[in-house]
Length: 399
Image (cartoon, helix red, strand yellow):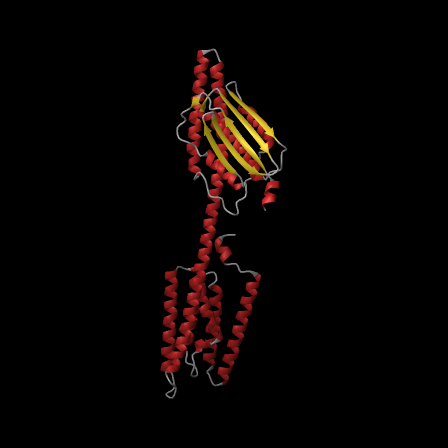
């Protein structure tokens, strides 16, 4: 269904209310016209007024889909009623005349404010014309102030309808703007989440590949092979830098978590950590894994944060340190929390890898979203990345 179709479709209950309102107004108009005819009005006046009343109802219906057409039909019908001589009263006071402010409402709620001002000006001009014509037809003994009162009431009705429609329109526009901003924030959050996942998965894999190639280059005895492996490792590092540059185009490094944020269902778990650690080991990179204490249930967001913390810690150690490097991954469990620790020995030396990445920013956001804390220690004997994440039992105790 298109936007125009949605605008032109009414709920069933609304259709019933509209039909009933039209029927009631039409019946009241017929009763009044019958009374005017009984008081001596000509038959052509009755038919002309009835035809104009019918046009008012048609205009109100048409205005739902074509506002300007419906408004023009209503204005024409009101002009017919104004110009018709009746017995000492304004024929535009017929009950069916209520349809004209309705067409103004629909027009104001659908077109630009400038166009709605034009429509208001037309309605105002019609009221002035109505009162002038009626005043000219007044009997000599009728006071002229009655025209001013009637004109003021009509202006109050038309102006009130226009202003109310404008306020409702502004409120709807504000609601649509808020929804648009919410969707934009959701898209930005999703892009940032995709960016973090790409960084965590691909950057870790590329870094491990480069580390293994460098280890093979050191252990091989053939100079040509050593040079070739060194070139491949350098190409891998260049690819890593290019990857980071491309990921930067996906959006900001981090997006503030929202109250309704839910962790993305990433197909990883703590059971994958031993294989993850083992895949990073090489002759020049001693990567070991240890787990202390009884494993406790974690929320999905906490489990994802734990695995990503290990992944980021290993990636940073292999990327920033000259081998040989020793990395220790340790999980320490208590009933309330799990402490995820990735510690390296500092390697042979620090490696110049250019600008700093944003992986730690993403990990910090993951850990914070899961209700934990992230810290780093940079000492003489190496670098430590440590995440404290609550278990489900720990979360229950804090609630």
